[in-house]
Length: 224
Image (cartoon, rainbow, N blue to C red; front, side):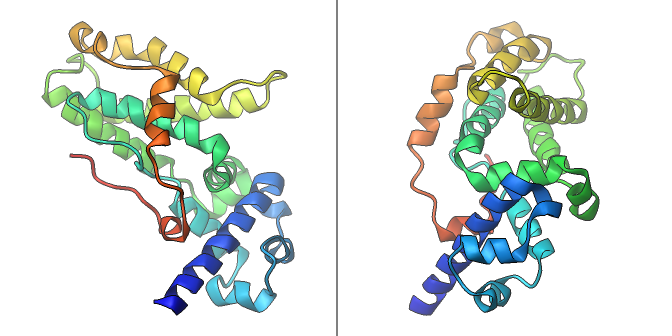
């Protein structure tokens, strides 16, 4: 167990360093040398865990789809809201999530590995389907279209606010987006019960334990 624990810590340190480098330079600008120097380890130690820069990028993308911190709710649309708000809160604070978005946005890396956006769209579409079956959603909506649109809109908010001249709180921006979109998706009685506030995201994330090496293997889960 001691050896396994050390291996996990080493792998986690490499991924954290790679996330910093990818986040700063993008995939093409990043080098293996900078990653192992940033991680304060040897080239051999890095190559023991990852055979290439491509493997590093793929490992970071694997942790990008996560429902960590999200608990099952009486309303399925509250789970949708919680996922989008919590990711907005976590992404600026967690380099691996930020790097995964950078890898998805940069064209060269996207052509090499694809993105995790289809997985996000499917996750959200599944929850919207359940919400519709429970009578929470307006009858005419298409769950797949909603999942794709929410993923696109969330990503757009992040990309655009990064390029604006002033600082914007991503959680507040996503909360504002949801307040605009949800009236076209949710029946009024359910809409009135949804908590679409940035403070909710902060509260949910405060309950999370500190992230460690075991979390680098991905933590997506099924919501019941």
